[in-house]
Image (cartoon, rainbow, N blue to C red; front, side):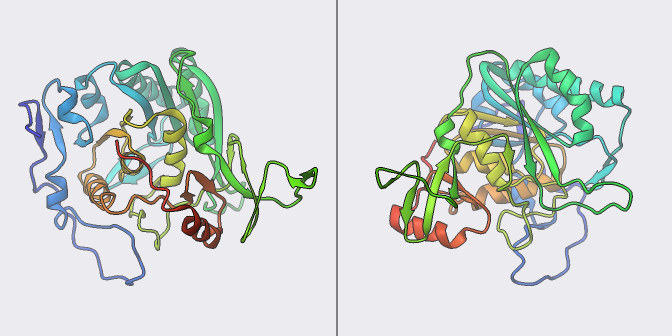
Length: 343
C-alpha cells in the first residue's frame, strides 16, 4: 500500500534493550528485542496528520492513542475494544503508569474515551477491560456517554496471594453501545460444555448430543467466563507483556459484536491480541500502541497468524471448556478444520 505524507512507517533504531538470555526450546514465549525485531517495527506507522482509512486499516500505529485517534477517520469503526492501564502503579516496557486518585483516573478515562467515540459508528459497540478498583471510576464515565449493556466477569486463574486480603482472581469487561441498534451474534459465542445430568424426551437427547467422547451441549453465553486460560509460556500466543489478554477472550468479544469484514479498533494494543484475533476471525483492525517493544511483538504475531489461524479453546464454531484438548481434536477430525472466513 502506498503511504500518504501523514502515514509513515516507523524508522528503525530507537531504544534497543539488551538481548534476552537463551531459554528452553519448549518455551514458545515471543520475546524479540527491538534490535532483533527491526523488520517488524518497520511495518508500523506513525501519523503526522489526518489519515485516510486505506492508509491505516489492518495496520499497527506506533504512538500515544490520545494523539493518534484525532487523526483517524470518524465514524469508521464497528467495534472498540479498550484495555487501558488499570489504576495501579506498573511498568510497561520501561514506561511507568502511576496510580491516580479516583478523580484523576476518571479524568484519564474521560480523555481517551472522548477521543475514541467519534471514530465509532452509531451501530458500534464498546468493551472496556478493568479490574474492580479501576471499574469504580470507569463506569460513571461510560454512563455519561454510552448505554451500558452488561458487565462480564472472567476468571483469570492466576493472581498474587495476599496475607491481609483476598487474592484477585477476577477481572471485568464492561459492554456498552452508542445506540439501541447494535450487533450481537449470540449463536457465534456459544460454549460447549459436558453434560453431567443428561435429560431425555421420548427417549432422545434434549438439547445435547452423544459423541464418542461423551455428552455435550452448546449453551448460550453468560456474563461469567470460567473457561479462559491466561497465556502461559508453552502457548504460541504468549509474549513477555505483563498483562496480555488471551486470544480466546478477544474472540468472544469480536465474534459477538462484529461481523466478517467489520473494523475493530484497539487504542491500547499492547502485544497485539485484539488485532491478531480480529485477523484470524476475518475482521479488519487498527491497533495503536505507544511502546516500540510491544509493536514488535504485535507485528510478529500478525505474521504468525498468516499461517496459523487457530485460537486455543475455540474450534469448529464453539468455545470449549478448559482441559478438553482431546475432545477438541476428535471433534476437529470429524467436522473439519473449522477455520474462520477470510475478510
